[in-house]
Amino acid sequence: MRSFCMAGVLIAAMAWAQIQMKTNPAPPEAHANAAGAAKTETGAQEETTTTAPDAAVITIKGLCPEHTPHSAAPANTGCETVITRAEFEKLADVLHMGKGTQIWRQLGSSYPQILVMAHEAERRGMDKQPRFQERLRFARLEILSQELIRQLREEAAQVPEKDVADYYQENSKEFEQASLERIVIPNRPQRDLPAGGQSAEKPEDAMTKEAELLRARAAQGEDFAGLQKEAYDFAGVSGNSEAKPKLDKMRRRGLPPAHAAVFDLKVGEVSEVISDGTAHYIYKLDAREIAPLESVKVEITSLLRQRRAESDVQAIQQPFTTDIDQKYFTVKGDD
Image (cartoon, rainbow, N blue to C red; front, top):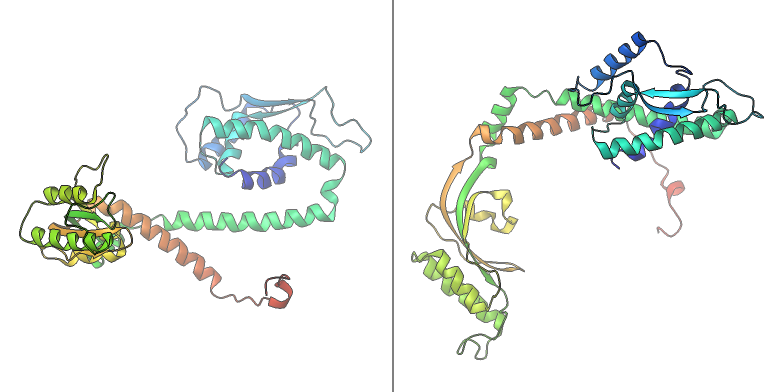
């Protein structure tokens, strides 16, 4: 139910305005204008339904737009409130609900209920009460803030090609990718070690010693796939444990931070044993290159959009300072 918390606030705020639209369907030209507005706000999305923009998609029979005395019956069966496709899609767009059968069905089910309840609340005069006015005031502020953020994001989305190219040139190391081979040796064996491998040393120490021996053989040029299989056999690793030491086009951030130093190896060089809480690791750097700009353009554009939006928000917030009465806001038990 994406956006439904916000949807509840916005729908409640708009409910009475929607009810007051009509008792009978509006003239065709009015619906045409509404449909045009809806298309403008949704980015002129391609039509995906045969339902006409001015066709009724929700009809609430008995719900009338006119004000009724507090003592009157809550519904008048002689009239109805109609929501057209254009009006419904305009509302869904404002609530940031992307097209989808399930989420639109949820809105289509909830919206009439909210309209009816809002109609009854106003009939009782609840819209005049201070509590409602205060909640409406806060909802307005919240919606304005969210709309500003949306606008800032839309403005930040316009990233010039030059900015993307400049970032790529200035941060080329971020897009360095390497073809690696890796041997993984478990910290602890999964079965008793082979004869002669236990003696007086702990199993963990035996695994550390085995990792050092495998590293020495790897540095002499032995095949990593064969060495990985030996490591699994020595540790008693069973099941689906086929040796697959190849790691193609890896980025620094694709490895654990303590392993990223393998990118500083020379091509063909084998790393020292890297040990952590999971296992012992041995790497070999087979090749290294900078990823082409075209392959990372989307990534850079997304990053620059995010940074620009955050910068714009900070620029608005920065001139203002806030003092908080910490004594007042301290909850008992927090000390």
